[in-house]
Image 1 (cartoon, rainbow, N blue to C red):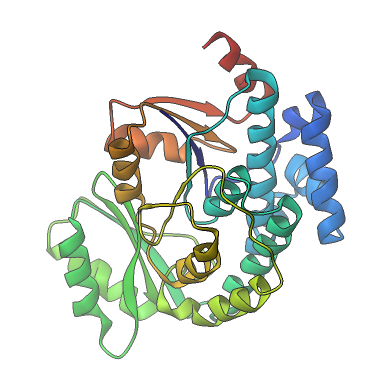
Image 2 (image 1 turned 120 degrees about the vertical axis):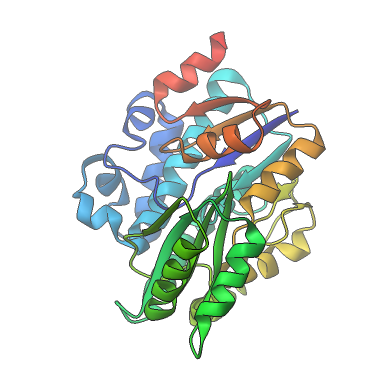
Amino acid sequence: MLALLFPGQGSQKVGMGRSLADALPSARALFAQADEALGFKLSTLCFEGPAEALQATANTQPAILVASIAAFAAVRELAGIEAQVVAGHSLGEYSALVAAGALDFGDAVKLTHLRGCAMQEAVPRGQGAMAAIVGLDARAIEDTCREATGDEICTPANFNGAGQTVIAGHAAAVERAMELAKKKGAKLVKALPVSAPFHCPLMGPAAERLQRALETVRIQSLKVPVVTNVEATPNQDSARVKELLVRQVTAPVRWEESVQTLGRLGVERAIELGPGRVLTGLVKRISPAVRLQNVEEFSDAQGLLSG
């Protein structure tokens, strides 16, 4: 069984998608459609930068989506590849839903731009923080966050697998959790250079804005199941998509469990579509038996023909 995987925020880089757009009219058309949907040249940000503008959350999220769907279009067109199941990390779940046929591409571009704006604006800059912790299991992380909370918020944000977890919340509470994690023997504790504390209850205002925006969006039937971030189980019920996307904003990303679910479904091969190789690295550590490939550039898609 083949799974297609879609990256989330953090994988962006200047130049992403350019070789695909240069070589394929279908990919070029996707970038043009995104530019029109947003009313500004997202394609120029992707291809040429500047990096600082591309790093802005409101731009990063639709940019990664478009680059990922361009890669998806390339593997379908060049290699005739169709997924049997899809999954995406955080923002990547929107790309997965487009690939599954549930979410219109133009709607996804607008939603991810709004999602990025809403998440950035939910917490005043400097009041929230995120940190990566390596070497403590999930229960120890949850206990650490609970001990550090006090009158503030600190919760797990990403269970990425292989002992790597990201926490998020109020800056002071996250700092307290980092110190506790060090005392408990964590191998690595590192503050992350992010502009907001994603996937924690502080994102409540963003979830509300997204919910209102989703009211005007039509969800189509899912051609293949999407393993969701919130539940780490396959969903093919179109009636549940909006609810799961809203919950995802404030809930932790259960990526390790999602990959384990893919294994139980019988996935033997996975292709990461879009910029970077973050998910490829995580899956390799969680499920070493899965055969992994990555399609970021046009040459990667061509390589699938001989692979």
